[in-house]
Length: 447
Image 1 (cartoon, rainbow, N blue to C red):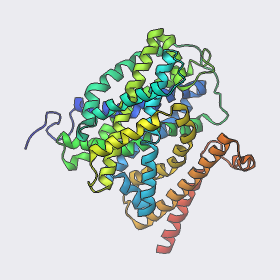
Image 2 (cartoon, rainbow, N blue to C red; image 1 turned 45 degrees about the vertical axis):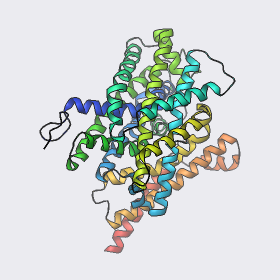
Image 3 (cartoon, helix red, strand yellow; image 1 turned 180 degrees about the vertical axis):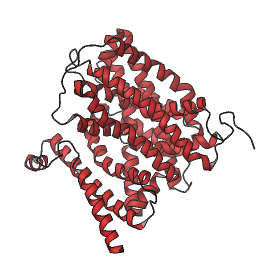
Image 4 (cartoon, helix red, strand yellow; image 1 turned 180 degrees about the horizontal axis):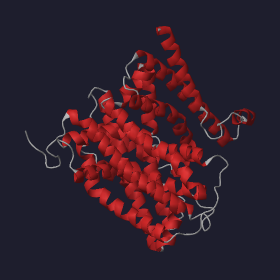
């Protein structure tokens, strides 16, 4: 039997190999949103940043690890997880919807669009034509495709080439921001509770959805390193904890820096805020730092997500579809939608992400927490909870679209009077109640 140099005598990843794999996972999750969003959360939360971080920790960090545990227990097949709970037809529909939202129609194009926004803001470019963004998007996804030639090596290429550069630049920004605070923390700027704010804003990073797709990338990487099938689950969880651990540190540090920026940058948010902060910390060089790290972060996430999307399609087709062709198709679609620009992508497709998130949370919680997930009674309760979360998520999505387009204000007014509606958390108590009712009624009938 060949002993791979990255494995210890027991067949597990050695510490340095684990760090590199965890670093690759961090890089894929970090992306454009996980770098930019936390600083904005900190700015809007101010002195309430610890409570806000607690909420964001659950949806953008803890549930990511839960997602990897669920995948590991289910052998890493997201599509079959959805089918087991929601049924074959709706499970297939929901999986397809998820893949499209976090794939070429929203999250992947968001990577290049955010990177382009950083370039135009750093260099104060005013462009009235779409040609430059189209050219940049083509180059961005050409580089992405280079890293996708071999599916089992995507993680290795990210860890060895991109992770070291990314972590050095991020450490430089965070280190300077913590050592030299920009100002005093102010009070929060929103009306809802800080915890609810962090919890629902954690949706925006789409980290749990990413985890459900990145799982196949990690499995292929671990197999290529020679890890036996009976060691895959434990090593996948270790990689997930390592990567999310690094992500947790960057989230919190960015929130702290953001919380000290409100006094000097009261009107800035997201990419503009990050640009202004880094410029304040390092001068014009700070803007270049930001541009470089955002492009790097966006690139690593695009690589991981495109690879994961392609492998899900290959798996669902029974290997009838070719990985290389699917990857190329996703890249081409991402070029088309990425050329639209970040503002339009976030405004018109963001509510869809919020709408499907509750059902995804139910799915990963069930498979991670329930020991005998195939038990008919608990599976039936999970199905009720899944559909309840999906329906409530869709209602919340419609409400947000009504607000965006300023229509059906009377309906919106009635909905907003429901407890937890404005926090987008109505689904939680209802879903839990539905799950318990179905579970208890089933036990009563069985007795």
